Length: 472
Image (cartoon, rainbow, N blue to C red; front, side, top):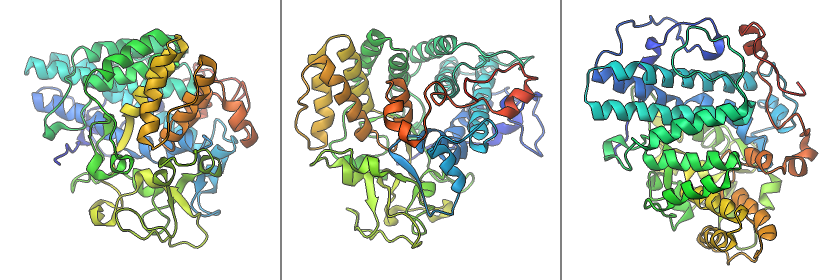
């Protein structure tokens, strides 16, 4: 399957500013004042946004520290002495000076700045109008995604709609940020195509914009709009991959269940993603971090095929014929099978697993969004139908929940096991008010740990215009 490879040269285009948290200058590169002149420039600038999706900040330690190990489905992994600082996230001991908190913050703002370059500069380029409008729509969709990350992790943040002359502005409210995200996604969805040719797989689609919008509405607790929007996505031809194992192997990339998927393919010029390598079996396929927790192990019902297709065990032989044999005797014994790339398919030119895509939004998630929204609206029958589609794919019988009150936790439980280790669990626990119940024993403090601290560096760079979150 042909994949797009995303140029990183756009780093040279970014305007300079004095605020580190939105500055994406690259050392040794001169800002190109004559860029954004041609159609090729517009494409390169847009591709540079996509390059961030596969970056270390969005798939490696920064993302996994913030969104992975803070959930009760993931633990640090590796061996006890390696990267012990990750335990600060697992135990909610991080603070405003913790590197991982700052790294995720900086990365998301770098990406926002790239989107604003395209949204501001590309409309004035003389080029094919259809392509020009599409590229701006892609940038708006991606800007919405990055802001969705920011608002869920840090709460209200400054809204930068286009390039700025002053980046030292106060935080907007979370409500204002959500409205900004919704506006971007609605505008993008009206322009983006439903599909692309094979050469452009990985570019965001109308389905991706609407799918993300339905999830945004769910977080906003606007259940009617979450229901209506997810119904639009359901009507667009997506379907569950009947084989849960195939879904996460390279052969399942951009399949029927793919709504928003990051192309992480290896290229000789730009390398690949470390998403799978960071989590791969210790000293066999990777570093062995961010591994299944005992709590996740016990969360699956008997007969749920997802358990053994999510948890990769030392000593087992995979369906693809690989004997799993960790190379570090002090390492943990279980790993994330969703990122496993069979040895026969591994491209060693870019390190282990660099062909493993990041699935940001799957159709199973859409069905569960629709089910949750339907249930909150009192349409329990529809909710049950969609929950059962996900359960039946996992070889489980229909849910026994039959009322709104019993179905609500059943849907949340289904999200837990279906989306395990996909960086959704912590955010779901906060969103649904379950964080204290599940994470309290790990150190989660109500009224504080729902959000992460605004990094000290960012507050200092803003001349103290940025205010801190409660508890930090």
